[in-house]
Length: 111
Image (cartoon, rainbow, N blue to C red; front, side, top):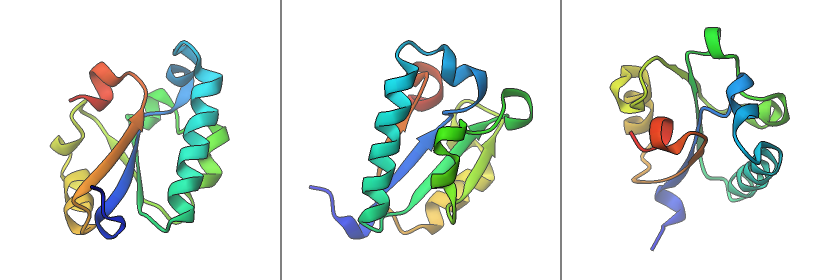
């Protein structure tokens, strides 16, 4: 069972044109927004990951207002934990159970 004192949310690569190419992107983004607002209402931490944001663009505008006060970390490999800054932020958070949402699960989330 999840313990709210040790649970957080990773939002992975919902950014730029890539987010718009995913089938059902409009409802996906709306549902992720609802998820994040619920997580924030519970006071749980959120970490945002962006794959090479200079080339692929930032998180989609519909979600950017939800990033306030949360780490937004760039990554340059598909496996996020291969990035020292991402690994350090996750390890220092005290969170042991991460809920994960994002797009391109076979590449950006699964690895």
